[in-house]
Length: 206
Image: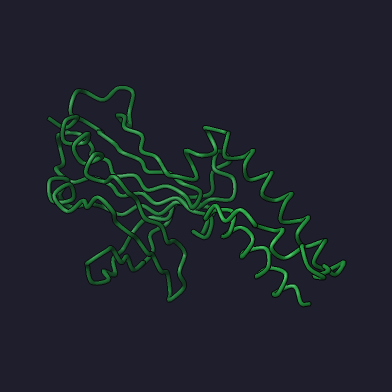
């Protein structure tokens, strides 16, 4: 049988086990069903991969990145109360940060960090298109930060936010973001539990 058939066999066995169908694998093996060497190798690889995944799931730090998590802080150590309030959502795809600045400007910054984002040698201004859940695509001028040794293999895009008040009002619990540069997708990621992050930002800014 083909590798696809072996995959279907494995999947069916797992479904039976999950459904507490007690005959499970023995349903197939009671008769004259014989696995080919290819199928045996495939099933053994899947078993080993499952064991590795189960071990990884026990790592609380890794699972925070797998599931995604928020961090709340002030982006500058010298910030006064209400200044540079920031919230960062991070998962395995990258991070999204929304932060205010000082009292001289009511706006803020929306920063995206990801592996596909360009990493120039110098700070530059470029044109990019941002698409958010429920909104039409917006093409604007943004900043592309230079490569940083602290974020090896990741690039940074910074969007100016005209009004933090409006940005917070528009935060949804689940929100997706897609960024393209010259027609090429460089970032795709979403957050969850956005309303909790919004409430924390509002509390900090007050």
